[in-house]
Length: 99
Image (cartoon, rainbow, N blue to C red; front, side, top):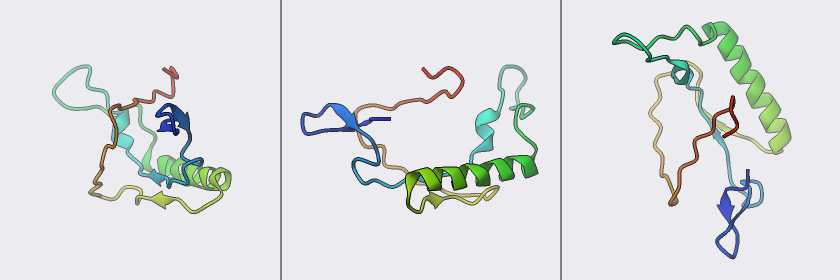
């Protein structure tokens, strides 16, 4: 995605163009359903071993495409991630709808 501004402040550059880095953190709770009841349901999430394997496979493929070492979290760990959201926009990526 071209989400970084060029010299005209138009989002025309990719993370590769700006020589940025990529941080990949697994977050299975994104698959939580909160449609009914008072607790989230994880019935759509893959079993832990399958999810870990899929996560590791994703890292290998992305690193091959990226051409340099990625920064990653630890699958299944209790991690504290700090984020500086830089910019006037936030883009929510929905892999199912591509919207």
